[in-house]
Image (cartoon, rainbow, N blue to C red; front, side, top):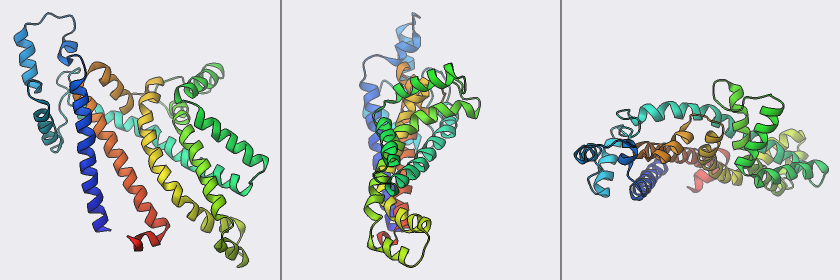
Length: 309
């Protein structure tokens, strides 16, 4: 386990360097000047603009700028915002991360739980109307874009029925519609994966043996069938976690939630390089940590994986 963790930490380090460098280079090579956007219609002297470029390090080559950024980031300094002059990036991203976690954790947990339940029931009730209906809903969930589902939910449940708020983040009710929007597609995909995996294991010899020993059907399904069926599903779960993290950019913008996604979108429009890089680094770390947790779960569900290294 120690050797595995060391290898993964090295891999995570190079992945973070690659992700941040690409974001750094893309933001620097994009057309437009962030300092001109900060100035707006003001007619500042050229020497003032030059002084700002020196202050923010924009007068140096891109590789040098990136080196200084990495060196400062290792010390916990992600720089200061260009738009909110003098405000540390951590003071902007920190509260946004907490807001995002409040509803994305609910979305992720709900997607996984509902997918496991739907997929398992569909496999048990194979080729019945329950199976057909559940997989039909899953097909719709996979096909429906986030913005279309968000529009339907806002019009139907917020404006027409007035069950939930349209936008905001003040109460738990504000997170219901965004969580459903973000969880719909991962839930649909995972439920189809769980169903296919359960159909593959449900008639295996060890399942027949467990029933012959007199175990209840629920114990056979949960303890023997589901545990083995979830192994291939875990890989898809790791991918869907990344999809949920990236999906927050669209959903938080639609529902006006001041999370890390909306902060990132606003920073792109404002050409606020430090916040763009801070959001990229935060999401990359979150994705790498969750995929590491998924890999460790492989060994928890199947001890043979640890023996085989």
